[in-house]
Structure formats: structure tokens, C-alpha cells
Length: 189
Image 1 (cartoon, rainbow, N blue to C red):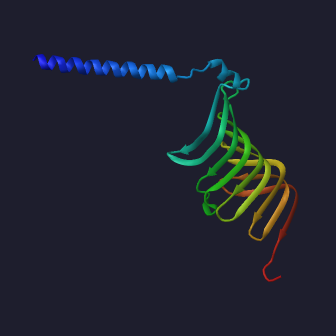
Image 2: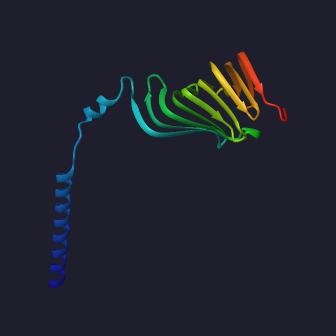
Image 3: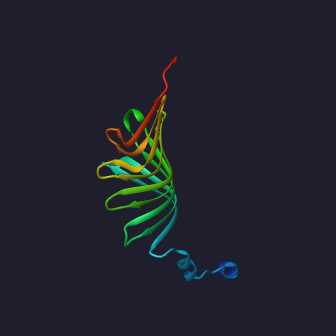
């Protein structure tokens, strides 16, 4: 019995020594930070800042579209999230497949769900349709994509340019609003 007490005492002493050594190492290597430093780096009216975000809109458990961004800052009072380096996927667009959208920056409003993107906006389908403009607005409620900027649509042998566009996501009907010009290359010409 005396042997057991000694082993227990020794084990207890070893455990306490390890805990103390660990606490000393943590205290010695811990580099604290000032919370004011972090808060000073946030822009005005920003309540939350994030890196690498992903938001997926689902309907009856089926993904409808996904938005990814390298960074985001959110303002609860405005109900808006400013996003950078955007990549969106609109799932299962019939014969077009999953349509992707990329842009430099934008803003996501949660109520109503609206995504505005600007800068090097490119929309692509796996079927080879590519659309270029400087800005787009996607409204989830009516599932429309709109722009008043210059647009260019490349599809196979067609190169269509114009000013302003309306696209209904569900029907895939595209309307170029103004100053439309088209070049269509024929085969064997």
C-alpha cells in the first residue's frame, strides 16, 4: 500500500510539473493583441469582415445559385455585404448547364436578395456562350440579370454588341436594349 501512495504521489507531482511547464511556455510565447488595433482596421459602418465566403441559395433543398468571394465586409444597419473577387454559379440552366459569373467587386443585399457586380464582369456557359460587360445586377425575386452598360455576347459564330441588357434566368431570354450590332460568320463563305 505504501508503494501505491508513492507512485500516486510521483504521478501527481509529474502532472502538476507538466501543467506548470505548459503554462509557463504559453505565457512566455503568447503575443497579445489590442482589440482597438483590429477595430481601427475596419472601415466605418462595417460590423463584420470576412475572408473567403460562400453563400448558397437553396429552394426545397436544391441549390439554385452559389456566391463565392475572396473577402467581404457586412453592415447590419444597411443589410449589405461588400464583396471582392466574385465567382457565382447558377445551377442547372437547361441546355446551357451551370452558368458562371465572375467580377472584380460587388454588393450583396440580403433583403431583398440582390447581387450587384462591377468590373470585368464575365458570364460563361459550358456550351460556349460568353457574355462581357462592366456591371450587372441579379435580382433573386424575379430572377433577372440587368445592365445599362455596353455588352458583348459571343456564341459560336455570332458576335453581338449593344448597350444595356435584360436576361431572364429561367427562360434564358436575352434582350439587348440599344445600339445593337451583330457579326455572324457563315460556313464556307
